[in-house]
Image 1 (cartoon, rainbow, N blue to C red):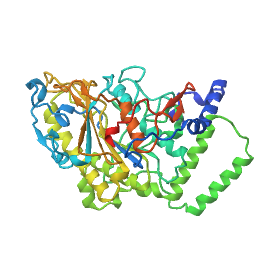
Image 2: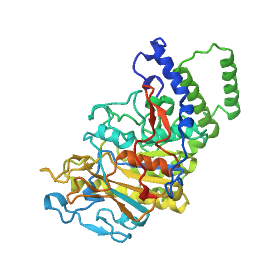
Image 3: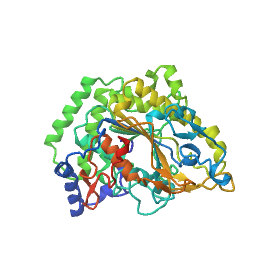
Image 4: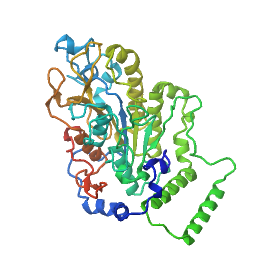
Amino acid sequence: MKKSLAAAFPPGVFSRPLSRRTALHGLGLAMLPLVTNFTRAAVPAVPGAGRARAVILIFNGGAPSHIDLWDPKPDAPSEVRGPFAPIKTNAPGIHISELLPRMAKRMDKLALIRSVYHGHNSHNGGMHWATVGKPYAVDSTLITPGRTDLPCVGTLVGWLAQRDGFSRGVPPYVITPFPHCDSKVYITPGQYGGCLGSRFDPFVLDDDPNRADFKVRNLSLEADLSAARLTERLGLSRDLAITAPRILSPLTSEIDTFNQQAATLLQTGRAADAFDLSREPAAVRERYGRHSWGQSHLLARRLVEAGTRFITTVNGPSIQWDTHKDNFNTLKNRLVPPMEQAYAALLDDLEERGLLDSTLVVWMGEFGRTPKINAEAGRDHWPGCFSVLLAGGGVRGGQVIGASDNLGAYPLERPTTPADLHASIFAALGYDSQNLQYLASDGRPTALSDGTPIRELF
């Protein structure tokens, strides 16, 4: 929604004749509801699942060190364990890093998975695998989105919401404050509509919500345009469309959808209200932290209240957590304090407002960091094992699922893939991810996730 339609397609696409392949692809898109309805089976029995109505994904781009945060190794050699000591939590038998005292007090609400892994070592490749649940064609940072991409979990949740008649006056899928990326040049594939079409792109804030003059443009009517005049103009537009010759193509269909979405946002005013952080008391904004991460988390809560189904807060911009150098001072002094403040405030605020049980909150990065500390007091990329944290949405807190080996290098118990995590997210929302399908760009029916729900979560 943030990008123009022209920007979403390769140069020259509008000048190309409508090919048979393109026409068939458009027909395939039109048949998507038939595919999903036909293949939908009864949701398998996952005790406790199906309670979530929204998801907040907190994504630490660049990849934080699991050993220095969630999976301490105090008995490992000095070149592995690092300087941070483990501390007790309010969940018996669970210890996490001393860098996380707020989380230690809330561990009874959290489920910690210590055995997640995949196979891509580059940032954009890793972010794709972590958010889409499948490897990209190449393990590289130098990649960008395209219209043949498989969609990420957030895109699919937004797609399902629209398929099911979503009409809350807010975007179903929002990314704040910036998109997943290695840099603003190389944007992670999968987070946009991809093969589903640009109408399923997320609303990307692409701005700092902590700015004093922060305001999302084009979500409210201009002063000289009343709601009644807008309704008149929309009616005139529909009348003209009836008499005008129809051009049958996927592009014209998407333009109609964009117009409808824009009209809904403007007519209801609900989105403008949800994005207006000035409506929050100063004390609440301070509680989350007057920084980009804190205000993005606060915005996520406001969007959940307004009806958005999936919100990603990218703790960036870019790969802020890429601590190849000076890992320990960077975590202690710059990265962890604002992240933990915002995360703790979000959990508490959701609970106080009666929203935590219906909102699944997932914390993760694209991979972990190397067990062995490098010569520059840093840790390098490591997809062999990392940790993911979940809370709310029916998740049973106060537990650790899986375990890594004595160095935090590889899963020792309960190996878990990103696809398993996504299947669990869909299960929390009440979807059977293996029996709900969409059509990939080659026309192949593709399951929402190839993984298996992590039953211990619920």
